[in-house]
Length: 518
Image (cartoon, rainbow, N blue to C red; front, side):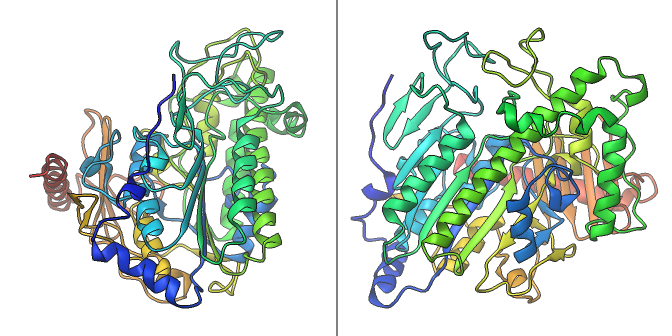
């Protein structure tokens, strides 16, 4: 099935909304020294999975960004793929805009395009309207949530059926054309490589333009299914035979040595749902799962290196703002559709599962879909050579959120966030720019930040965080003294807990009114 459609931003180009038209004219009137913007997102990756956050996975290119820039330890997401992307794109809470058609909003691409930027995207989208209808000039990728890395579509002649989660097809798109199914002809197709190939193609096509560009590169790695190149898997074949308990301990030791975690901190204990490695059965199979997961991150890093090299070759590296982040913490879901096929090849469909997700999220508690730190806190790395001249910084002070990306990009691009776009009102931006952090200046943070996904909810105000999951009682934590949420203070400080709960209730009611347009 194919669907054709025009770009929403293009449709709006003839409008008389001055707040969007003025920046583009101003940019054209003088030499444009605004930065290029490269936004790279990993999928379902824990806080400690990359080398510069304590992991043993080989990630020299991501680590290189950290050496040249800043690692943040308290930049949050929304605990789940779709909601995080909704906030990333709009600068609003997903409860205000939804995760289907993004209501009452303008996207990063629409704002930057209206300010004179070339807007490009490759990778995972996970929203209803395809990217070229929300401000991107070009797009290639998965418009859905997850898919087979080797072949997202129909069985090819001479190959086994691709492992799949659902019977329905995963939606793909190339510019304005939607594919259901999308079956690549190339037998060496692999999504992580393909996303990069298209990103490089776009950079070759537009990289000589005398205007800044915005490239959003959203990988599906290391989201399940566990699929990786054999040569990448081989690199980790013996790494994880020591088990998840040893890996968690090693990662935490490295985090403390790096300065990511306070030496006085205690890491969270092994999750109650995880068996001690000494008692685990099928240890070789468990080690193989994590080897494939690590290989997926390794291959993503290799491809990030290709993109960074292209910016360098184009002479655009010095004034490119690069942000690397993940959409949520490590995933504990058990979606093993092919238990008799080992993880890695095309016909398999396996997940890494809870024990290794617990290691991925070291030193935090819980996982993707939870609003404890393990679900909502992941790596956030910023490099911008022209501005961040002292690399290797670790920011343990400032608290950021995915809603801050819009504000940051508007700030560095000189783009005006509109009150109205394409004939509809736009909700006021919720985020606050992170640019002062890049420039070594004090940043005014949020009065409070909020979360809700499924059965989980949380609010953070200053050092205090209130969090709950399902029918459990609210838990209260002092995040300065107890970053890993080990000492619940709700009973000791009931008035503070009650006040934060009321704050959350008020926020949720406001979001409901915003979503309804009331």
